Amino acid sequence: MGWLGAVELGGTNLRVAIGDGSNTLHEQARFPLGTDPTSTLRAIARWFDDRREPLDVIGVASFGPLDLERGAIAATPKRAWRRFPLREELAAALGAPVVLDTDVIAAVLAEWTIGAGQGLDDVLYVTVGTGIGVGAVADGRIHRGRRHPEMGHMRVPRRHGDRWPGDCDYHGDCWEGLASGHALAARYGRLAEEIADPAAWQLESEYLALGITNLSCTFRPERIVIGGGVLAHPGLLDAVRAETAELLNVEYFPECASMDAYLVPPALGEDSGLYGALLLARSSSSATEAE
Ligand SMILES: [Zn+2]
Image (cartoon, rainbow, N blue to C red):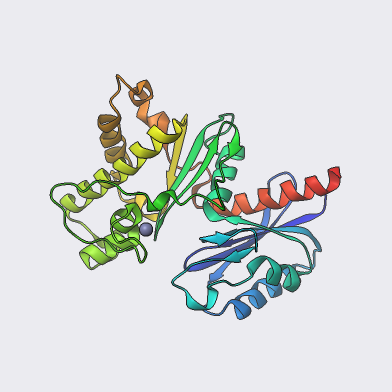
């Protein structure tokens, strides 16, 4: 097996890396996601060209939603990226095959394979950043549904008579529309990391716990890995653990007796998606070799 490429396209940044079949990233870089896909792809191609290593396969973990049949980005507020045929264009720019999947499917793949969910058959990965995304491993397999699930857009009940309309472009007060970093900034008029009001974080912990509770009832996972920028707020993870345990009820869900083991931060830190991209490339590369 030769060198593998990894690309993670996030809402504001993109990351690139070269790795190998032993799940090691050798060199990596980060740059801003351009508003124009063509010049962004040119920048990615230039970075890989400068490394002078021919790549067998490139794994790509992208923000979604994606049309995985066409290998294209589907709906997005970023106009120039809407319906952009990412897989085809990137393969042409880099001269190697591209394996494309969503950022959260890549992240759950990485946490399950080499991170906090190793050895388990039922693991979820939740990211609470600009948006909310969830990737699932159920019965020892990545759960894909039709195209891919959109669990960040589930509905959750309102708390404390809250009537703020929510800020999801498509659903208003879905989970992401109430509890994402973007929603926090829209509701309180400042970046999530600048919000100090304890009542704001209490409400946030309750909304996050409602979503985690619904996911727990649906998948009954052995572990939920939760990351993303919003979880960096001190004490939030513990508050979500406590709220979730109360909602699930330890008599009904005995796993709530050890919430520290049930709801955990990502073992790969901010790198789950990038490692996931590498693993996507590796799985495709070994599949090709096995043929
Ligand atoms: Zn939504």
